[in-house]
Image (cartoon, rainbow, N blue to C red; front, side, top):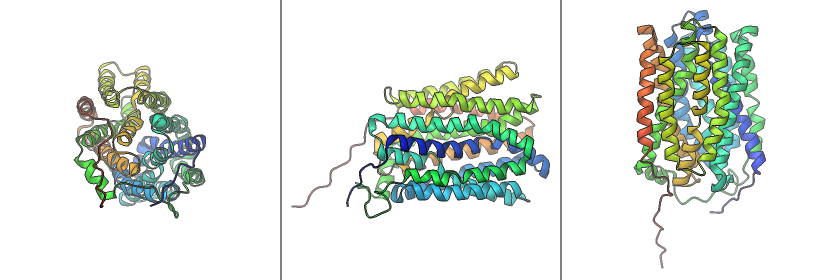
Length: 406
């Protein structure tokens, strides 16, 4: 089988990849701002909204596996193009859904599938194939930082759109913005994939999966990423309503989510740089433990706008900083031939955690009138994730060399 050589320049790769992730993640991070406008306008429970977002995260996780396979086989361009179209359709459907079922199908299924094709696993596959191992963690950190900048840039814009245009028109406008990812994907075309030439692989998909799932460190990375999903999606979706319930002004939540995005630019970049110099397992353990500590302090101190902004800034440093480190570890252990697919499986674990975090938030709030129990679960899981990442072995896996027939 003929091999392809990297053909994308680093500036082109980072610029297009970062712009795509900025749009995709920037739109996604603002969904919590729509919880109260939609539920109040439709007279739905918070659990109805939370369930749709939970399905979105689960659909993202499941679809991410197949999007990763397709991107490894045919290249990222086609996958991102389809994802951009699905994103636009999902946002328009979210704006005009008349029943909880239609809302779940558009907000949950369509947007979840769209995110699978327009976010980290697919873009990181291109980075893995076109950036040397010496710069890979750094390049992934740059891309993750772009997603954070998207949150900082777009969440306040989304809040402003809701207040000036109304929540339905705001979603429709975001649907048009999502289509911009399609032309940006052209900059990630890899001529060696999807054409006459293919990337040389030592393993089939089945062999790669068997190897990964039998390897304890892969299982530990998946367990840690489960916790990451639980924490960030619960906070991202439910914190605006939590703060409003406590009597704070709506703009406090918008500013808090924006601060998370701003500080995560620095956190993800720093994590990517440190991942080239320090054991990645120690970085991950620190991140999860620091999250647990930050949430604990946030719940203990008197709630005010100032305490919210401090909490958001600290959590921002830790928010997506797990992403470049976790994916770089997968690449370091297993190589890059099946990186998008393996990253998709790790991310599937993340999305199961996301499903539970966002759904439990709505479920327990509707039954207890409080988010306290879910906050406590997030703290306990943070400590657990710190412990399970410490035994991860980061060295490249040693594969047996096939015997050559004489």
